[in-house]
Amino acid sequence: MSKIAFIGVGNMASAIIFGITSSDTPVLWEDIILFDKFTAQYDKFGDKPYVTAESAKQAAELADCVILATKPQNFPEVLSELSDVPDIEKKLIITIAAGITTETVSRALGGARVVRVLPNTPMLIGMGVTAACRNCLVSDEDFEYAISLFRPSGSVTVIDESEMNRIISVTSSSPAYVFGFIKAICDGATAQGLDGEALTACVCDMVIGSATLMKKSYLESGKTADQQISTVASKGGTTERAMASLAADGFDDMIRRAMQACTDRADELSRG
Image (cartoon, rainbow, N blue to C red; front, top):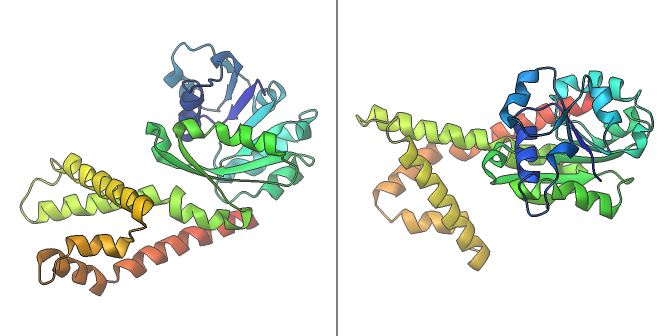
């Protein structure tokens, strides 16, 4: 497929665009068509030879593949506009909105082929995680093409659509939990008389190093999170006391409740 239209050009769309134009098998800038109501979004691409459209409809008309990157709340309006595009059902549609099913998009667009993906914000630095699924109309070839657009910006995991709303809380919304955890540690440092703000980079390095160690140990030897904790929390030591405090405050249950709230909201969006 040669022409790709992005309807909505926020952070996620920008990460995809920068990824596919700098990968080993790059998409040409002149084959990228952009539409966003806020045209200032185009400024981040400088003088690259991309194409801009006057409407979502025009962008889709010019493209072979259409990436819907608008907010879930705007989907009814966008889908209504795109339903008037001639032969829209022949174009490959990729949606990155939380809670919007392939059935909803396909039905609105006359039985279109739809790939649904859930990327996350670390895509902005090429370290994203994207979950992907498809409806039954998408061929293996088209699905491989669709997910190839996300690989330059991180890893891709393919799951069944029945799991998509639940995976949001695991890989898509979860960077916010991590950011909140980092903030809590920095605030805790401040409460103890340290300069928490100045320690932000240090705390980020700690999180990156801890996650990298856990991933490496898990992939190489299957070492679990509990086993990793035991290597840090020696009996009677400071870490054991800290972990006991987290357990007493319901740390694990707090995370589970947050994840369930995330999934509940995705289910609400799916129901419209």
